[in-house]
Length: 454
Image (tube, rainbow, N blue to C red; front, side, top):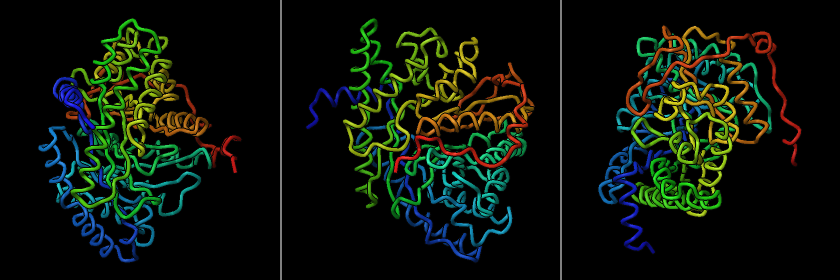
């Protein structure tokens, strides 16, 4: 039972501390849309999305009105398109037509993003996978709502270094084709290791092939709530600190589950998971970096940052799993630079570098996220950054990702403005020493010894 004290407390979180449901994401299985005729496949995809998701936005708005809980985004994730297009797509342009179909369908039902323009190449690329990956720059430059992801490795399979090399080139090409808008196409492309099938957050969401026909996944976010709670225990010991984070995460997750169950009921679609991720926004007070500062750091990036982030991530997960039996997705703390004013401040004063961010990704939920770098960064250097992050995920049996944005025409010291939820970011320095010979070896990095658990 919820008592009046908890109702008042939740209202305060919403009104004063930036608590929100970041996204209701509807996953849709498109396997029954596959076929050999491209025009028929496109029509089936459009019809299915606009039928299954026709009431998604209305349901989200209704829940927001009834419960007073802000629901920032309504989104769709679909089956990885490299699977759906395998029989009918023979050229890059063929795949781009599917991206345009996804974009039209997303516009029709009113969602802000649709994810799943994706390929899963954990071990190697099929011809279809490679074709989709090569189509990504054109697809993202010709659409507004389509998001793309590529999973290039896993703990069980190792890392497909051929795909890693290719994606360094693809990211630069995407940057070039969207340079009139500060290379924003790269903000809609993420490279994963150990990608989950039920992630509701963009740009990495796709409807995994292990999922059912349709599912409701909800992503909740509350960095401001956690920071406010920690203000009341300044100077307390670590046990008190951990207990405070855990209790706060519990309350936030309960809000997410309430919304998820109500959306499931309204849409008559099964509830999947709640993803409790402390996903920051450019709004004042909605920052993971500010939580780290409240824990006791002068800036994110100071000595102790990795330990503080590990503590935060672990307690968030512990609180979440007590609140819901179906916590999934990524769940933990995100550390995107452009979307977190505290992270931006840390970069600008010199406290935070890409190398320190990489160390932090060993213990956070995802990886190098929304990192803006000089537009003249080499493709091999981008591939090297991806390879490093994928190795962290593979060895540590966790999800890691890279969303890096080489901003054409910008260099270190400049700033890029993406606007809206994506915020703004300083252009960060990249290590300029070459890794080209390493990247050009080709082939696959094998799975680690501890992957053999059968």
